[in-house]
Image 1 (cartoon, one colour):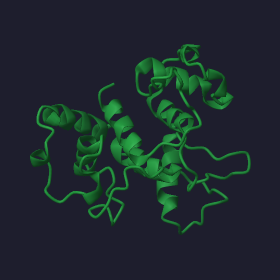
Image 2 (tube, rainbow, N blue to C red):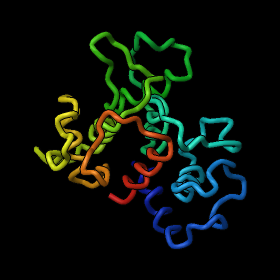
Image 3 (cartoon, rainbow, N blue to C red):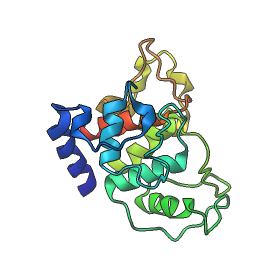
Image 4 (spheres, helix red, strand yellow):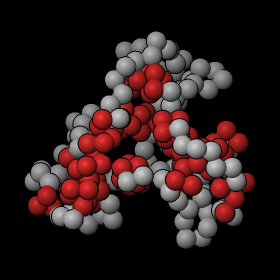
Length: 201
């Protein structure tokens, strides 16, 4: 939680000067001109993607993010360092995924499916992201909030409460067609924008 507070303070401090001069000179080469460039620069500066050795070469903002990648970002944002004594059937104990998933499990925002699998390399959906954030933040329930979207019936039952709460808080919004698109995959740039939204809510 201290990391989130520090992220928020830094964001506010830099918000008025979001230019390339406000950040380290060495940044990923592929974010120049991207709609999320300044937010990505801030996220990189804050070290939210420190586990990626190739980061200074490329960020791949339009690549879809995996579940375990989001776990790494959330663990760093919230300073989750304690690990649960848990084993997922689709994660080798020595895998680099293991640490991030055990931390996520300890924090309570990742649980295995009915077969004990974490699906770490599965691409992250908007509904899944809402569920993870909801479990961390424990937002007040807001039943029916997602019914403002014309595709609300596409929201998985297990994610409905989380989506309602996150929409109410303004963390995740619909598109200009009044659709939530719960099963759409999130890009890395969209996840950064989501972290930015978290800092301000």
